[in-house]
Image (cartoon, rainbow, N blue to C red; front, side):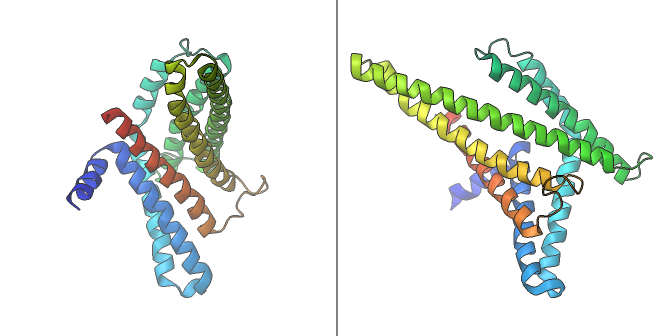
Length: 242
């Protein structure tokens, strides 16, 4: 129990960990609130309260992202044009992904500022633009992960053949790590697809299924994505500690 409590505290003490927890609570509240509201209609006070909580947590994350521009810029500058990347397709996918992520933040900031009446103008087009950039980033991330999975599978097959033919210890020992990488990328694809479905839902009406999802479905997709993100964060920390 003590270790569990300490683990929760250590997660909440980091910005990344706190954001993951808030995101999970946000979508989880929307999921439960949406289910209760759909079952009981407008009479479900608990359902309405959970949906309001979800909206407030979402707003909290928007405010916290006001300070993400510099960290994103540092990451983009560190990656640059990806000259160390061997695969040119992965390289340009990553560069375009970074560009979309970098542009996303100022667009969202302007939309937030317009809603808060800090600046004049309507926020609708800025929210739409930020959603388009988010969806573009997700789509590029999905394509990138799929390519990594295909390339890694070829490495596994090659390692297996070399292991049987020459009994090369290095080739055999690398196979488990390659398989773990495939699983990580597959989870990333699953998570990003869930987020992309929500991103399309938040686009202007008339675009695919925009505006057609009920609250519980948005909450379900977001919760699945958030839980995967929490698991990936924990696994990455475990790899670092070992």
